[in-house]
Length: 280
Image (tube, rainbow, N blue to C red; front, side):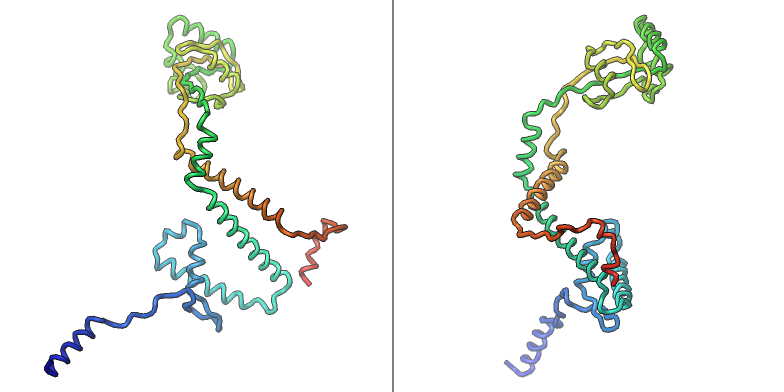
């Protein structure tokens, strides 16, 4: 190969390789120094990860600058606390570290408890053999006295339109809607009202019923079998229950298995009020 050709080939190879890339960012990379104290990229990432969700909607540049500025300010302020730390400060930091580590352990336990298999098993246990019961669609006319309720029942028996009468005379918030209460299940209405509804056949009217809200004349429109909630509808509730069970079981198991010595015999519980013990 001629000398000129070799030179061009070498130049082309160098061009294809491009510039040497800098090392990938690392958690230990120093992003700022305050009076000799380093602040690292890892600290910034950890702080961002702990922020409430509303802050994470900020754009990356704003959040980056804000987090760095916060760490710079905190570092500068922390340097104002004289060394060695007071007993109060040292104990408070110990407690904060203990709480953080314990919370991390609880999070791991809770996360591990929620699996598709566990969710399905708990769903089957709670809802697999459950009779969903009956839902009721009813309307009512609410008035202040029994006499008014009886008079309304007489008008209805004489052929008055229930919805029109509710709009005209009901004092309840459903009055403008013809007294329609929509669909509801057992336990959603006060007992006297619910008992009267359950006793009715669809299309029938109740006798005046008294509750703490006044006197009601009720019309049962229709009934239907309540739907069993799906696993997806109950997923969050079931996951929370699984997590609570797992956490309680693991905390109990760990404390029962631990070698624990309590040296509090004869100690007055009021001693916790004596802050002078940690201020000296």
